[in-house]
Length: 310
Image 1: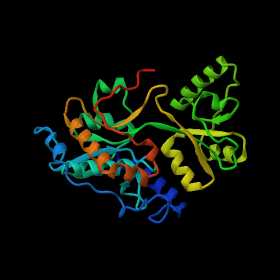
Image 2: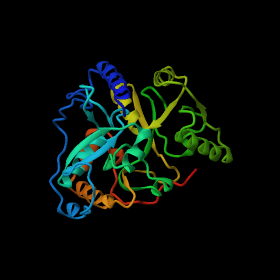
Image 3: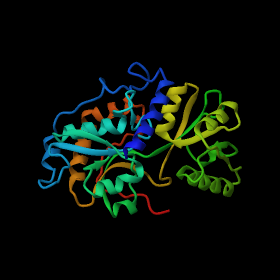
Image 4: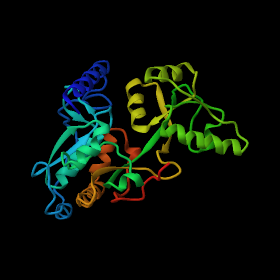
């Protein structure tokens, strides 16, 4: 991310955080740069032994990662508008410590991470990257979270649970146009119509404020977005609740993974480190601290089956 774009992102984040007094060290999310309550890990000898002897780290002794600080709780600028914090950053820190390395975080625009990784400017990317068969042709992966979408409603809503297609029959749902969520809900509607049920009505708004106003006013019944985004909104505003989650790859499972140059060999070491963190409990406590424990994996895998081309 160039200096101009970074300054804009930091300014926007600062403006947002200034309106959210509950979101500090004592609130539902700690967005302070110090992060005093984050988890730490001891070196994992098995993971360290799996690091290729010839891996060309950007900086010796340091794991240099790229992440897009697009918003809490996964990756965002802290209240100082400079330090990047979030669940993905904390997970990367635990992995770096498990590998006996320091961590360097490089804010990286989403569109820029593939080239930054392939050109050797980064050792890895931790930026909510989903595993797909197409991406596996160019990159290696070590999974560390599930990719989930969330169904959220206003606290006063009569909707209590959404788990399968029939649960959305007849509801009005706000969703982003052209998104993966829209694609899945259209498939759910096809299944409902085939079963003789009323389809859900999908509606679209240009910005988050309009979506939330529609939900508060009862113009829509449900909002669907990436799960972590809605977790943050619900904690921030206090008048929304989760009624279900949906795999981002429905009907397939979708995993989020640390991303590496193809054939670099670092994915294996990182996967071993993640599984050690799962066993120790540090992994689960970190996701819980950022309120995304529903996205936890039972086991990290290297290059698992990815989502097919749609």
